[in-house]
Length: 282
Ligand code: AMP
Image 1 (cartoon, helix red, strand yellow):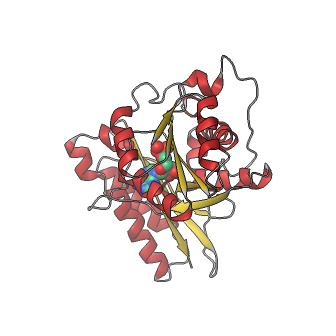
Image 2 (cartoon, protein in one colour):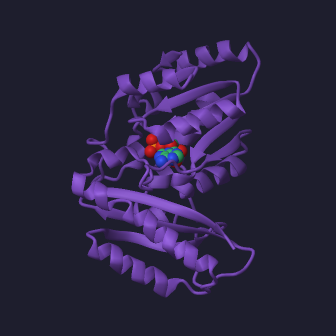
């Protein structure tokens, strides 16, 4: 496994891999790798001959009051995990390597980011697109693997690939969960024992609402409000918990057979923000 930090060395390492002919997959991450990330690397291996993992805590996608400084970082451990997962290259740049001294251009988003995390984290997806677009241009993968855990990110990147004409196949990895259902996340490391014990409540609420929808509830609003109150009573602060159209990421109030939905929530337990979602096709 080759570890690179600069764009120049990364391109050199990729040129050498490309000489062997084969499909190249990219798995972008912010490090503090857990089994969710490793499942992406595994899936990438199934779709490609070579796998590049990027590890970069992207400052452009954090708001001024968010956890950029405290975000967990452990490059040595991450490299060990990437090696065990048979990654070929790990690109772990510093900020200066990808952004230089100053960026003057940005990528604007007109829709798809008005709700869910885009609604509550202004500038977040613009920052995500900036780094992902750069990674696509630096690495030029045939395939890129992203997780359903960040479904809105997946959909916006899918749109960027289409509109910016990147020749990249996007692959979605399912959500990896702990035994009690909590979606794995680097931020779970922030949770106290008590918060960790409560945390799977979000997934349980999503599952309950989903099961009622599948049983024929046509207007899930009341159901959702009730689950919000239950979660609040257990100490969760709700950022959002709602049903969205998979196509537009706009909230949906009445269900239609044959349509696809995202049932998604973002909550705070103490200071830790947790997100989760289910994809529902009726
Ligand atoms: P992050 O390091 O949090 O930016 O995540 C990097 C990639 O891993 C993204 O595509 C995420 O959607 C994905 N990911 C994060 N957590 C999970 C999980 N529990 N299961 C599957 N994929 C995940």
